[in-house]
Length: 309
Image 1 (spheres, rainbow, N blue to C red):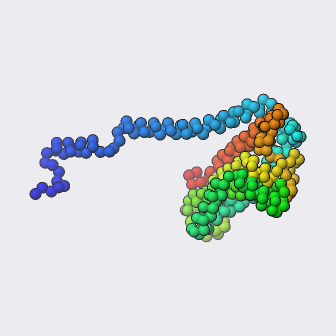
Image 2 (image 1 turned 60 degrees about the vertical axis):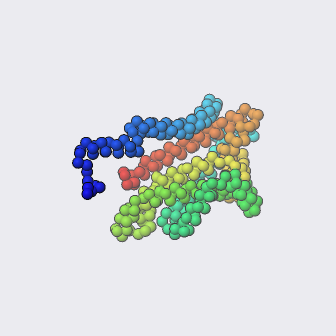
Image 3 (image 1 turned 90 degrees about the horizontal axis):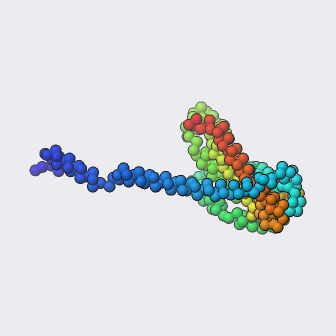
């Protein structure tokens, strides 16, 4: 009896059998693979265009409207009614940026460090879920809750402290997530090598882990700042508005900020007010571009601490 694994005695029958198997298989042809690849690239280009086109449209429109009439005096003159400059709004926005870096940056980085290195699995998953839920809440809800809790209940009124706390709660999840991801991407061999050399845990964390994760942490901080300076609703409820220079006090200290000028002055009948709104939008765009360039520079300078450098 002939074994089932035995090859046919006639070689031609064997080749015919193999040819039938190949033709009847589900392997895609070269033309089909090329068609699918072209289709995938077309979808990728269309997606990229869908992202770039609105950004170019917005930036171009604001630049065309603001740049021909832009004056340097806008940077040094306070707002007076619906005219003047944007000095108080610029200084208020810079104050918010510094406050976010100190408050949200510290809490967010420590949260990411705890989640990446020290959190038990159960509590870590709970904290990550709460952080993701917090990141999905609309900003106007943060503003309303901040108004009820800080401005009304604690009698802080419209103030810098209420605005900073509200914005910080908004952006802490982003900083914590990017810090955690950046620290988890540090090769374990780095810390193991430090432990083998007898280095302390704190020294390994400061000099090895954080240096290697610095590009990711920096990116998270800059994204958080960009989100914070672009918000209007939370600040309307908590920081109010003031045409005067910002006061470095926690309570009863309303301040100006650029997004207020964009939101308020654009709908005014005065041409000077509309021009101020375009100037404020143009300065915000320049600020975001500066943050992007700064992030690239910091990442490039700290990339030498990465494994692939």
